[in-house]
Length: 457
Image (cartoon, rainbow, N blue to C red):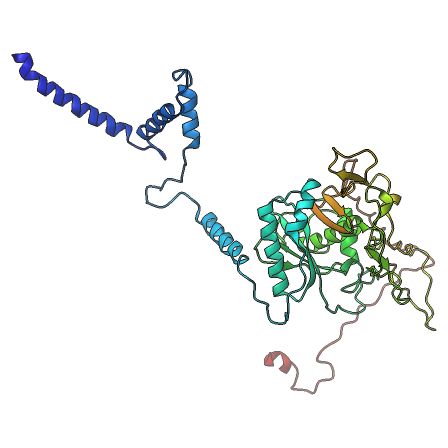
């Protein structure tokens, strides 16, 4: 009887222990409790029904833990551990990226938005060449380009490429813009700047950090910046206002360095099928290249001789054409023996042996001797520069770090020689000393007015 009377008390004590144990298991020391984890684990065992449940118990426990959503737990003060700056940056990005999905309204001065490259279509061809920016990203970039065309009176907008950086990347857009430059502007060495719409400044460029971000107009490039950019080798930081280190010193910030790099890559890698463009017949503009309005036969794009540069190359001055000649007192041009050679107009890439790779697409499954319908051309001097040709259509794009290929280890330029001291014993150029002359500011002033100027101050 005693044992019978004590049994309910024992059962009650056992129920209290179970409740305490359950409360302990439900206590959260992180995003989930042991109780929640065991519940998910048992559910997975029942759902999957593995043959060796005991053997895979630890493995399934690890999978459940990995697949459990781990949100940032609130701190003791009730605030989230997520950094406020990161949260604000995410909110800013979402607000900016969402604006491109609404139809852009033309800005003041833009009567009708200019033509924009159909990036969503050409991105499909670029995928065959191994350049895949993602279909969703391509669509967002296409909308960003349309937004740029609506905000600026620019024509023929296209996606130039993506320059990778250590702290952020640059999406670059290209277009033609009618503007006036400073006439006769030149570098310190006398190299004349190329006017907007000509040479290295034929196109205008904009950069943004993400599709939907604010487009920043890059300044026109100068010959000194082109030369300096070719003498240094460095990664981009992702900040357009960052300083550019290295030797020789670069004349500008990172936005000028980015613009100079774009000019170098564009002049060396932008190509098109032969016949798409033709040399201008205007005698006053012998270096102009214009679209070919006549009918022409589509060349075999899998041959190097079928691809031409429809933009002029850069010379040693940092220009595409020789420096305008100086004239004498009679107005006759003075010949410069160090002037670079005139540029080749519509030169083929066949002349640049070892700098290009041509591949028909698809690379397999083609009949022997058949010409491919799609051809990918890669520039080996600038890794990341790719051109895709299909019939009379073509697309150029660059995705890389903005640095050319070099088989040798890069070595910075050696500083110039230290200037020699002046030879005071040179008989041909004698060294003479000048007597120091001190002028009294009050000399000749009437009496009583001396020092009045100082008192007035």
